[in-house]
Length: 496
Image (tube, rainbow, N blue to C red; front, side, top):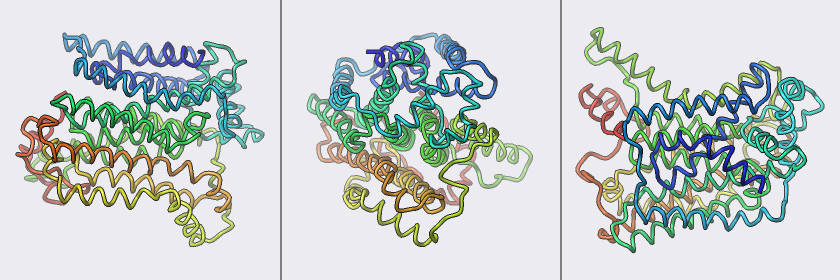
């Protein structure tokens, strides 16, 4: 009950107005709101470390500022958003909530894993004790076992829970993490639901059933880690949500804002999440507004446009990644080093690489099935996917390769003995890769249904008449497209 109250009043209410300002009123709004509240709590911890004081007053300041700005945006629009989708949208919300409630039944056992007990609870207690205790605790070699360099989002939410219920209920932190896991998976499910626009009752039923099923699948991939306080499901699901909303769904301002929110949460949850978030943000920026590679006519106006395009592109990457990068800078400034890097390796790089490939392959058995699905989809349903105005399938696979590549490089160039390290973590670090490919299969399922039964879903306005979306890495011709065409493209995705 304490976890539920903290989740609703501490996170959902703090992020409710910003979520409405970002995407209006829809099922996704209810899952985005706690994400914004959790990110605000993490930023409050960064202010606690950098300036002083305690986390809760800083959380109030951050939440008030974000809500005032969001309320100003709503007032500027001169119209409050209305509920999107009618009764079927409510049924979708109920179906997703019902599916998420099934794995959360595991919370009744009050099981807490090793990392949540040793690492995240320690960080939560330090954060709730104020600036001096937090900084000295992070720098204290005695606490080196607790990975003091880890980002602050999860312990920040736990400290917020302590402010509501007191510090005697230590299981509160893991329970809040499980609820955040559910919010992240809910964003994936509602994002998949937006892939189609059902035109019949059967189409609505299929969409709701598939959205509910993906909730169970995502928690199934996470296993016990979804409810026992581990953070790997949270950063993985948040990163997958960023891919779905930023690289799969049609380009729009609201979808971009959801993708950015997911990337921020992933970057503030764990070090692996920061790497995956940066990789996804690079791809999102390329998809929404790739920079010019050279000035068009060589005059001053063209050069200014070249500089402006690069500045905009850099801001689209660095802006959402900034909260996670700030924490990394703060940790380095405090002289805190990661346990996983900095000490001499005991094995050769080739040995570490081969061991990593063998261990990761064991948990990536879904790859052949996903490859078969994308081959069939591209061969038979490419036109359908283009008609639905979805992103090129290469974007999602590029995000998958980037995430897997970051994990692989971490194992190869890290410090701990590789076989011990893999045996204790590879089942968790591959959750993102597995979850993303299973999500891709669900997306292709909706595309195939739309192609096989055109009456099941309605066609997109103007779909199928334009050129297919650019590939992952635009060539010189795409990068030097005329200014007039680029302006039309930008106007297309900036309409909310």
